[in-house]
Figure 1 (cartoon, rainbow, N blue to C red):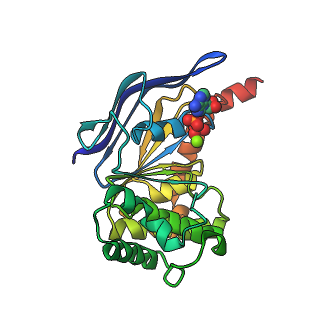
Figure 2: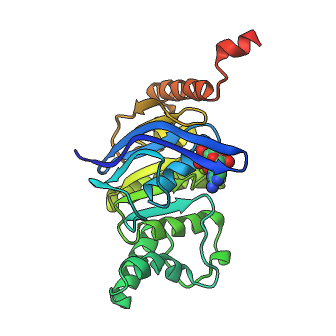
Length: 265
Ligand SMILES: Nc1ncnc2c1ncn2[C@@H]1O[C@H](COP(=O)(O)OP(=O)(O)O)[C@@H](O)[C@H]1O
Ligand SMILES: [Mg+2]
């Protein structure tokens, strides 16, 4: 399998009034085509920065970002993104919001074809009948479903999800987790999910990468060797409980709060 995303020795600092702020330090990460990678790490360790580097919205001071065998040197149209805040445009209907990336990436595609593609996805996520509504007429979970449709409508090489389920209630979140597996089966993609929910990472990913505290580096990689889709009750298996405990411990290390240190304090 070829690596669709390859992050090689990426080091980056932001220039601030107080001087350079190192955010990433020799970060390495690779995601083979069709795989789902989750990235977890303490707040401020550089996760969102990593997503901007992959999308080609900024470039690292040192190291390389490769997508589909090409060095990323400019913004990439073949990346789909979804965020915690769905950022749907209120002056457009749900259908028009989902079509937006096609207007940018495939301007010559006939309008009817764009609409058919968007309708197909909206129906897949259970939003049939809501095509002509405005974003404010939908619940938070429905808006996030529409946002997911928009992020994959142009069949991106890679889907970047930056805490997309973080603002949803627990049950809606679990529904959307299951929807992600369903979407993966119907519309195969390679994904990088940023999350602070360890259960979410174990349920959704094939590989969980734990980033250290800032400057973020690759601290630990856990392989979740399970097929997709997965039953949600896999989260209660002995294996999952063990994985969650391992990740929990790694997060404590990343936060610089190892149990040993706490005992000394
Ligand atoms: N454009 C910027 N200029 C200066 N500092 C920034 C900028 N963007 C983010 N930061 C800082 O860089 C660090 C990493 O940010 P970010 O990548 O958003 O972390 P995370 O997503 O892991 O919480 C944070 O301390 C943040 O305040
Ligand atoms: Mg972030």
